[in-house]
Image 1 (tube, rainbow, N blue to C red):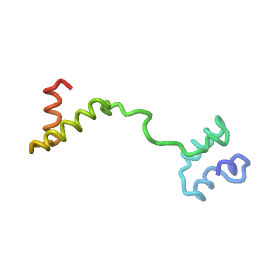
Image 2: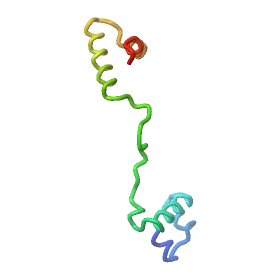
Image 3: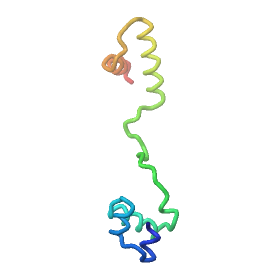
Image 4: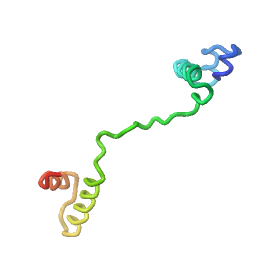
Length: 91
């Protein structure tokens, strides 16, 4: 699509109609092509670069350990109980 637009075989509107994508997306691809060349047209991940709310490995391990210990004692290990214990431990 991008190459056909670049060599003026198709307009952006015609290419969008033919390929079933939006004109906006085609303009994004054209901009990436101008800056990065053909490699700019590769699919990109939509996943966030980081997860600011993700817990540390230490906290995750404590949650798993606490969960298993509570269940082994026959106690509640639900979504309210675990944070309550963690807060009590200062985690």
